[in-house]
Image (cartoon, rainbow over all chains, first blue to last red; front, side, top):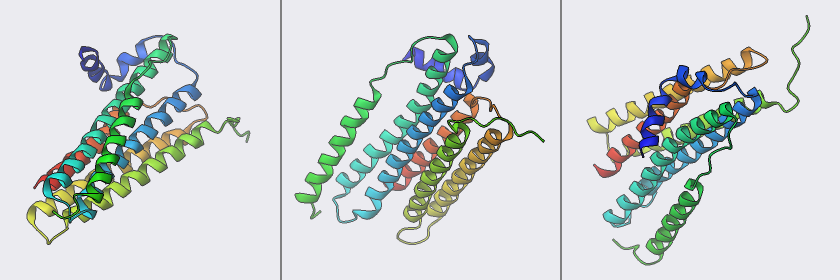
Length: 130
Length: 105
């Protein structure tokens, strides 16, 4: 958590990142940028999913509808913040010539999406009449 | 005039297309946001949320445009700056905050 706060300061201080290590091959930086954008798209898709649950399941009970929408929106926010944090960590690791950071996040997100999908299936099959 | 050597992996082009795809994803989110904001009649809060989401979409469009321009300007493009990445992420986060307001209210 403390490292995350330290990283947040680095998001806004590009000079500090450039002071470390050596500039890697620009193609590696571009690949890192594309991975970041792919995560950002995932986050936008989750946010869009939150809007969609709220809009296209109007017959659902209020609690279920808002709960599912908020879960998807929270996942979207988490995913986008993690995207920029992980991009920064990869960029710094490449500059220092270290191994790229390992992450538990893809597994966590996978489990969360599975849980939301199961909840949706249960809600659609059982709790349709609100 | 000698043309600069092309990267055989087409890395700048692929990155440019990744920005385009992400812009498309943000457009979908913005359209859904406008639909949610104007659902069930026009209200002041709905119009404010709608304007905010459109503004965020425009901000993202501008960020993507700038980056695409920077990618095609030189043969060896500079890495993405942390501020640029953070700004793009904050657009997504702010859209989600608007969404929470629209869903709960």
